[in-house]
Image (cartoon, helix red, strand yellow):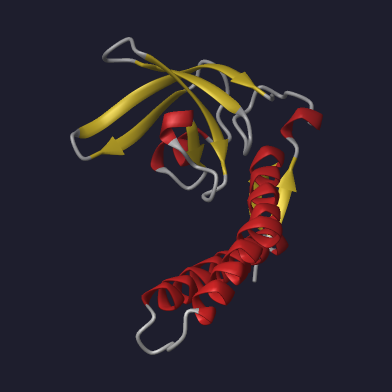
Length: 158
């Protein structure tokens, strides 16, 4: 399987979640299963079945996180010299040419993308259009409502 780009912050968040699941949630569910087992007949024991189902979800998430981390190519943008180009991990400020509205996004891996946190997946149309471009370049993004033009006004390597 090929490596998937990920920022240092994204990698740390996944490691933190994995640690929490392995050291906290896993043991909480084991205790819940033990307590439910002590209640008797397992065929009609709703608590037991609910705990087993939760255990399946947690174990599945652990496997998923371990897989993502093992296939991650962690990129530390802060250690790179700012060449003024939009690259993976950079933070780019864009100006919508038709509305004069500024937006600022960090370009991150797919598992880290979160529009509320202004983190944009590197595979999104906007990020793909901006990649490799420099300050003052104009990019065009095809949207359902038509083409939108942005001017790149700042590129930061934070």
